[in-house]
Amino acid sequence: MDTHIADPETDELLRRYENWRWICHYAGNAPWDASEVENGRLHFRYGYPHPDWWAYVIEAGQNGGYRVLYVSTERRTTPVESSQGFFSRLQDAGKFIIYKVGTYLRSANRMEMIGPKWRSAGLDPQVDAQVESDEVVRYVLRSNPDAYFIMALGDMPYSHILPMSYDELDAVLLEGFPESVTSRLNVERG
Image 1 (cartoon, rainbow, N blue to C red):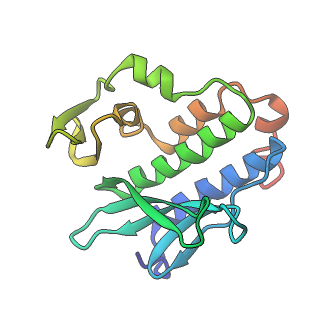
Image 2: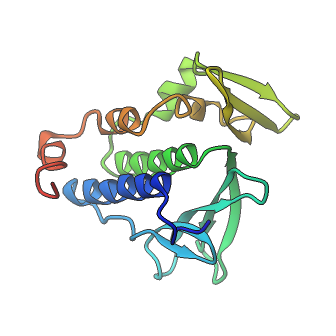
Image 3: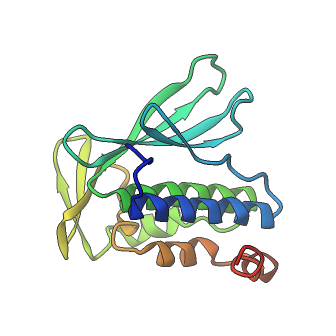
């Protein structure tokens, strides 16, 4: 992923991520680290370079699309990577990262988690699930078959991210935050 070229989708993702770094700060939590590009991959780290840091990484696929990885050094000296999913569009990989940052912050602040609500709601009605194997499912946006992601069979709650815009996802993730946090979002950084 070459982010040296002006790319509106990458710029939007980085702007949204930076916004969530500020939300962490406003909520009284340590913000995630600034995003970085290393070896063509976009890193979103927490706690780097201290022991037990972890991150989400987006890397461009060889034939298009984007793979999201989880990287952790927990109880290790060498980071271990595990695949989180493959996304046909950068914006969907980006929304997945924002969801992870937002739900981490919700958990840290002992707020109601979104995943259980989405799990009990079942598959998002705007999304089809195409089982590719006994372990993998392709979640496809009905209104745009080119918009999809491939994940493990049990990751159905993420289907709710696919039809959302960044603004809609932000609204869901910010639900329940005090006004002392939400009122500062557009005022102080303008």
